[in-house]
Length: 208
Length: 83
Image (spheres, chains in turn brown, blue):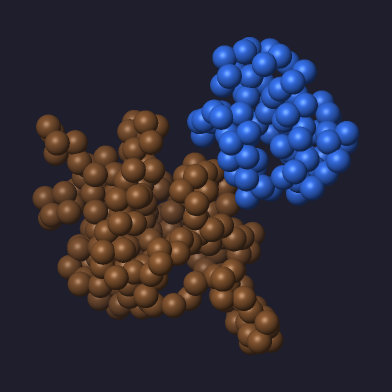
């Protein structure tokens, strides 16, 4: 991805994720999100372009940095705060996202409590990955007109190969349970799928 | 493959995914009546059907498969045998 692709990338994000929290924060925040990911040496942004026109029809973002979200937030603090403030009044998605994040915190605390109790019996083969040499897939989108023909599968395979070359031993991400298209995609590519709460499914693939 | 054969094989696949007796699966079986039929099991069902019948189910078809009759209909359509 280059900076010339930024507008196309933001447009594709808005098209593919109209109801996501980040989208509700506005185009300015999205532009900063992708610029930050592009400049971050621990992150990777790949776009799928039509060779003839240069039009961006696919997008994937991954990172090795477990603190990516926090650093991103701090790097554009006022922009995010303005986006949240604006979104609280103007976007149902943002209001819902804030409630969801509070819910996630509850699940995180509960999971931590369970992990502390069960750490002796936890099976490393089946336990969800929480290690830093796993790449985190933050965004994976293909334009609706370009879905089918296995383009999503090929694009995700390509992205997986890229993070493998960067030294990842695995890759993981999260999906909404109602995102059937994504869940089928990951399952077809033999990713592990585990429900973690009513609004969150963890998907991961071991690469070693 | 005729209609009865498709229905029997779909029953077997669904029984395996939802840990049920195939005899308990019929026209009445749906998302509402099978408690284990959540989004993750739905994905497992799609993949299992693809493997069992050697076909590929589009996402637009997958969202329609919310009951035993609709699963059979989509499988038959994908096999080129409309019910």
